[in-house]
Image 1 (tube, rainbow, N blue to C red):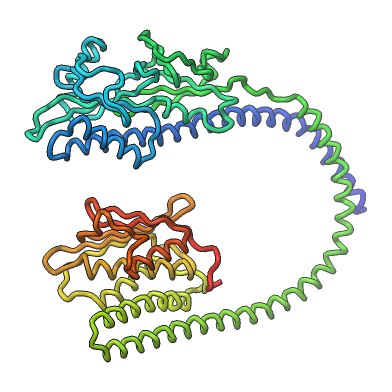
Image 2: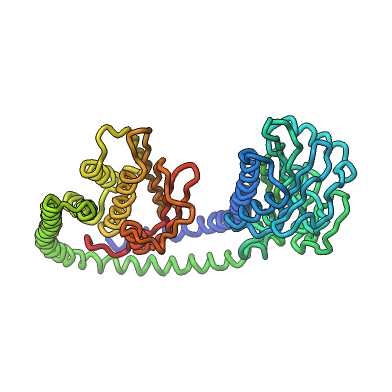
Length: 532
């Protein structure tokens, strides 16, 4: 009786399979069409994201130049402007073509500089009125009444590349308008983002300004003189692709609207062989049902044996849980004893400090106590953590700052402390120990050299994730280190410790002393921890 019922179920299943077969084929083909479209949309979206990142580089470069001109005591000479431009490009590692022009209120070129040459196109003294339309001149006159940065339509430069002209007004010390700056940056740098990776073999892109003018990496087709002899092999008009096969997005930046389209060079076709594969699948499924029926009977017998085995496993698991509890208890005790031993060492150093009359010895012992405490605090946190592996970074940092303030803090000090660390950020013991030593040295130096009673003192600590790395930012409003300070050759034990700890974290140390004294360390958490 049981076998007859099972056969009926098998027959019904096969019939349903035949009915579903056609629906499956139709659904699959629709899915394949959607995958093709999704791939185009993803390629387009990824390229747009990269292009926006490129625009951010442009914006940073132009904004830095504008800020420099605004904040200089006197308007720079042509050589000074060239030197600043070269230093700025070296900092952001921008290796593409750029020409920066200073143009007076009458639209006459005063400065024309590149990072390596003065006026290579020979434009000094030339009036823009002879080169641009009246409409563009009127727009530049309007620009000089504002403090905005605007991008005008790309142009074919005499140097043989397509330039994106950024423009902003410049003033003298009395805030009188002197004219405007026109940094012209290579548009190819931006458009190249759409041809990165293997996707460029399958996709084409069109770039349209003002809904009518085509831009390529080599030429803008706006009926102006073309100086570049090269043509872009990926120009969309080289391929027979209708407009309805493109998807479009717009980039709006500094008054410029760039319409960007993406399409397949040759749209993929869906293979009909999937239907034959589906029939094969149907046959295999029928055989599988029969096999499953046989295995079901066999598995029924095996289930009885599995229940017995599961009972034995549960007994073993209970024993393992007891053993694991004992191990965790032992590890906690080890951390607790290590912390107590470090505190004992710190106490001995305190006794030694009281016995010495040498200020240098007292200071060295005090620093040693602080360093030992930063490591002891790691073991204290591991002892209290549920996993015995990880430590809450923000809580650890707050307690470390409290300790340093207790042992070397200045009474009645007006200090504002800001800690920007995610409450859920955790690191293992080794990583936290290294970070603790770094922070201990930095905070100690701030108390000794940056803070005093005659001002409002500020200290800020930030730790955040950046891609595969983490970034530690430490800053105070003290005078900071000298501009020519060499970390590698420093005799300071504290600075040597910072470099050693950063190196152990595969980190890179950077220092700046512009608005405030700032240390930045990009690091990776350690993979091996003594707490594991």
